[in-house]
Image 1 (cartoon, rainbow, N blue to C red):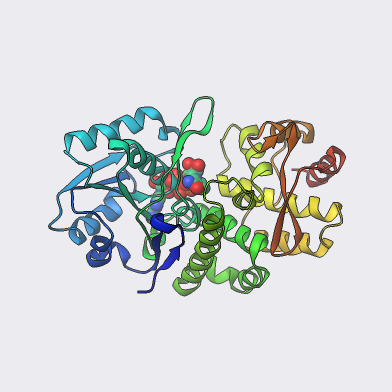
Image 2: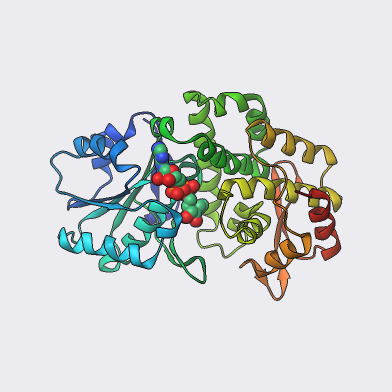
Length: 359
Ligand SMILES: NC(=O)c1ccc[n+]([C@@H]2O[C@H](COP(=O)([O-])OP(=O)(O)OC[C@H]3O[C@@H](n4cnc5c(N)ncnc54)[C@H](O)[C@@H]3O)[C@@H](O)[C@H]2O)c1
């Protein structure tokens, strides 16, 4: 199986996308150091996929760390239990962590690997669509603090990523759709032909047709890998383009106190608002907005924000961490398939977009 590769010099690693990867002991072993392996997973994913992984890694000394499920457990307290398992299991510097689960498990396991004994290897085995197309690739790891999401973290690239598309069979519909928001984001920000492909194959994706899902994941990972390779630590602004839809999305998530809306659902509305604002500023034609709205609707994602006053959403957008020198940096479109950073967007234009969106 031919993996994608992310070009980061000595930190380069393969990204495998395909069916049955969790049972491919040969592929898994090929990229792991010699020592003990600690599988970090959660109570939902463990009964589904830990047995097959155990079998694939037969012969290795395995330590298992099964965490509670949920974003509320992406905390320093839970991270402490991962370190406890690593110490109790006598995992040394030649050992590795395997992150088996969605983005919550992946972010926490990755951060544990970044810190434990000043850094050990970590392989990502993402099992949600969102984690397969986004969080498992790129090396951002973190836990939340009561003061904010992902406030405590590190850059720590994995040694390999294995996106086993068979695991998506058990993913709830709503989680699948939330992942599709990030897939649509890649088309919008980088590849108009991929966006058009998504328009054609939307029903195959929501119907979980394996070849369609595999293509969507592979193309998304290719785009993310290329962007990260150019700007690993988000210093040049290139990586910030991956935040298309996220400044609006984060404001929505904060306004509803992270309840009732999944991250991908908030990003979906954010994508449409970014397209609408781009059109208001004369950067793209209005038909781009209509295509975004139509595609989001077809895959069952929301296209209107919750009932929050526009002024409140704008206030929250100004608190987002992408604010420099008092100016909000927005990711907008200057055509379908090309995103740009703008720091000069008039407040009136943002308010017009938020006012027109309505709940
Ligand atoms: N590091 C990054 O670059 C990055 C990027 C985007 C998001 N994130 C983070 O990712 C997290 C969100 O990730 P997520 O959307 O994967 O959520 P998640 O990890 O909470 O998973 C969603 C739900 O699906 C369950 N699940 C996972 N795999 C399953 C499967 N195959 N079958 C059935 N159920 C399954 C999980 O147990 C959970 O209940 C957030 O914490 C976010 O901050 C990180």
